[in-house]
Amino acid sequence: MTLASYGQSIPRAELFAIVNKYRVYEEVDVMKVGTLGTAALKNLIFTSMATEGLGGDARVVMDLIRGVKKMAIMDYEGCSSKMRARITGEIEDALRDCEMLMEAKDEDSAMRIYGVVADNSNKVSDFVLFAPNDCSLICLFGSISLDAIMRYTNQ
Image (cartoon, rainbow, N blue to C red; front, side):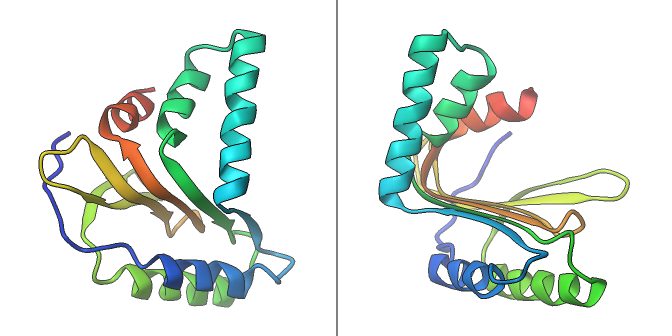
C-alpha cells in the first residue's frame, strides 16, 4: 500500500464533540480514553506482554498503539435507523474535507481510513477508521507506524 502525503488535518474537536453528543444514548456504546488513560492502557498491555509472554497479535496491536495519545471508539449499531442515519451524516460532514487514505469494501460494508501522512515519514497522524454501514467510528489520535498498519491489515 502506498500512501501519498496529505496536508489536511483531522477535525479532532469535531469528532470528539460528536462522540460526546451521542454517548448519553443507551443504544450508543462509547469508549473514550484521554492522554493519561492511554498511557495507563499501554503500560498495562506492555506489562501483560512481559508477564504472559504474549506475542503475535498482541505485538501488532502494541505497535499500532505505541504512538497513540488519545482514542475514541463509538458503536451506534443498536440505534434506530433514523438515529443511525443522523450520526453517520454528522461523522461524514466532519470528515468531508479530509483526504481518505484508503477504503476497503465488501458486499455490505465499507471501511474508510483517514489520516495525515507527513512527507518522507513512515507514520500516520490522527488515524480514523469509519465504517458507516457497520455504524462504527474509531479515532486514534497521535501517530501510528505505517508498517504496523500493514501488518495488522495483513492478518
